[in-house]
Picture (cartoon, rainbow, N blue to C red):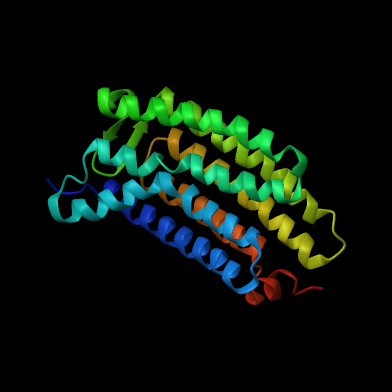
Length: 241
């Protein structure tokens, strides 16, 4: 069995997005060892893990290049979901460094309950009836069912809502560089949420795959700029100042 053109395109763009996300995450995370500021550790780990839903399509694509069928459904589901709650934990730790610090334990406790419920249901379905989690459409694409989708939407809403609150701190600054970081983070949250929702709901063809994955890649680049703001990005975006 050979990969279809759609599967190949999907796999390539998943791989590109994952590679960029891992690069962005590890670059941000590495700043922790230089500056000893925990925020870099937490937001770097967040972006590495938040790209997890696209890991299995990348892995399955690479495996399918040799065996034509990719990885088994159980492995696909496990690789793509098991660490998502941990990504939200890292993000909430970063968020509560700056906002609602006095309510950190309450916020993390509430999410811990949600995360534990997710993991219990996920592993129960994974071993008892994986079909309740989703269906693989070819080696690369997956159609998740309501159980996973409900939790993924909850996780996405948590990141987006808290993300806007977090970015708003930078937007209030009079420093143009700090304000630019806030704008980039807003774009990152919007583009990631739009890309993730479209990726899980829009029928795939050549155009939709390219557009959706480019939106997701934009979110990774803006996340990078929002926390690092490299010189080339600052020079380009603030060139008129």
